[in-house]
Length: 340
Image (cartoon, rainbow, N blue to C red):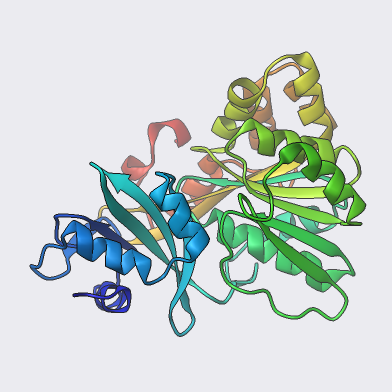
């Protein structure tokens, strides 16, 4: 029977990032947009269960037996972990795993824009959102930002996570506490007061994918804490549309967002016709004129400010695409119509 370590080793040989194991099929890995079969042997339900049983604990096993899904992180190689999502598929177990480096990247490693870094790192309260599509490196950027805060000053940071991934270094003058949703955190009603009593300066809420997490982020950022979270969206415009119209709604909610939102950073990876990959980004920092636009739900006015406001820490994808065209990375025809 194949073990998780063997499957991970085969995935790395194919330079894959994702591993997918489904009962009754051959395991596959995904590298970029290509899927590779890992051998010819189909894994039956009992075999998949044995693999899963080899890396979960008793609490996770109990959840699976009760029909719940589980997300966990496993050390699979030197300097690498795998974040694994275990679920049921046609009544049998299946899992998908993503390879992630154990060591966190720094903002310099990620080519995080210096002008935006200065704007974000001087904030000591409010809400900062790291946005992008799935697999765009949102969590990696968030943790690099936490690392930068811990290095630049003496702060207590609390990181709320779906699973513990990687390890922060030891800081001379800062402390990072880490808690797991569903394990250390079970009740959002008492969590807010618990965090306030914990004398924290910075809170990472992880992915803001429901109203509980959004409400926690807004409430604590309004109480003098710097809150950082990740959020899905196609661009800054899409993030603001989702934030104001899907999660919340109403003038009071928009007033709260307008008051606490410090900025949104969005990054995406694109590929030209020659197969070359590039990372581009856009940035929004919330100034006095845009607070009014957010209160009134005028998202297009915010986008116009990003384009023409003259702020060095605000720019949109039109500028990022134009820079790639100027440098020969893309042709004009390869730029999406929206950003030409």
